[in-house]
Amino acid sequence: MKKIGLLFVLSILSITALSISSASAATVFTDITTTHRAYEEIYYLAEGDIPTSDKAYIFSPDAPMTRAHAAAMIGRSIQLSSKSNSNKFSDVPTSNFAYGYINEAVSRGIIFGYNNNTFKPNQTLTRGEMALLISRAFGYQSATTNDAANELMSKGISSGVGKGNFGTTQQMKRGDFAVFLARAINAEFRAGGIKETSSKMYVNVSASDSLNFRKGPGSGYNSTKKFFTGYPVDVYYSVGEWVYAKGDNQVGFFHKSYLSTDQPSIGSTDQYPKEPIDLELPPVKEPLNDILVIVDPGHGAHDPGARGYGFQEKNIVLDVSLRVKKYFQQTPIQVKLTRETDVFLSLDTRAAFASKYKANSFISVHANALNGSANGTETFYYAANNKNVDQSKALATYVHERMLEAWGLRDRGVKPGNYAVLRENTVPSALAEIGFIDNRTDNAYIASATRREQIAKAIFLGTLDYYYHYEKRPEVAALYTKFNTKPSIKHY
Image (cartoon, rainbow, N blue to C red; front, side, top):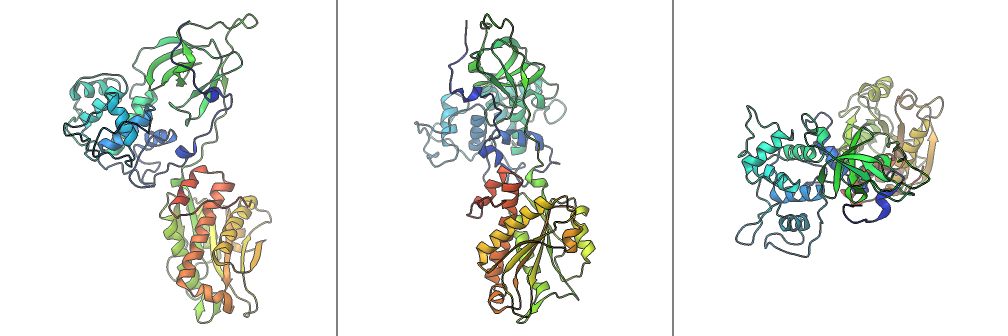
């Protein structure tokens, strides 16, 4: 029996499908929305934690592709090591994000340095140079940029720039590089599909184990099926230590260590290979880019709301809401305010805002008043006949806990409230009363711009906590680091 490769950790064989790794789940880009031409390819790569970028949450698809980023993305695609014991270049220090990938790629003849012991990591690539890198990395072995360009076009990885011209001397854009790389990895993205010929191989694991069939070449990709020993599969090409294959009329990736060219013995009690089992994939959730949060500054114009010590509620809550907006604008999550100036909106108009814009959550910001005799922070949700009552209570809870943490005022609790902006809303909704404007203690916080910045950040972070904990969106975890904080404890 001829076997390919050496066995490694048995976690690859786990019967349970693995979820997306925390690194890949955290990869979100504010400039790559569902309408972007390279959306599917970029986020396919992101599932395997392949894309690199100079700025958090920004992919910059129209920026030129540098040699360092190309080496890193190709290296991640074919599972090169991110670490290296060999420092080949004076201009690639160990602190460079692509240090290991550059040195490993050079060792394998995928990319080369220059005669003066430099790599020039920030030098940009042409399309022809990109084609040659992909050719070497994926085993095509073209000798020139023209040969590599023609091979990429023949395989459906590129359609060129028009009239059969590949544009070898044109600058390589990051978005186009991601498209070509995704197509090189997964033939489902190519024009015309698989063009390579296949060879028959067999799953070769112990009788008590199974082999995961994944959407991409790495354990960061979801498993779609599990295969058992002896089952025949058609193998088309390799991507590092993984192979692109067809099994049970479905295409995907196996780790090549668990395939053999000869069919293994199945055993006397089971003369036929067991049929593959379909695995239930996690539900597909909309990307963070498509989540819209509505922030509703209460009152406005001839409706000033509560007053105290020379301050009007309508102005305070507008200031806080605008600050909340600035926080969201630093993330992929979209935000929209019901008002951004001193105008009056009816309660019905406010409540209908989320439905009108197909939002995902709604937070109304207010300040309390009661003859100066009460103080503290409280948050409301609508409980009666509300299909979103659990979500609304969770949203209110996470926002409330962050506000208490920020200001430390008296905790008046999270409560049901029969307010029109909550009652008439169609999405998870909360109403935050940040403090009592007519109470001397609370007003000192409300009157301070620094304190208003704190409470705005608290409302923002509470919303992130809701999506991270209650909506179970692990990719939100990456957003906290930008603000030097972490997810809250789980409250709900």
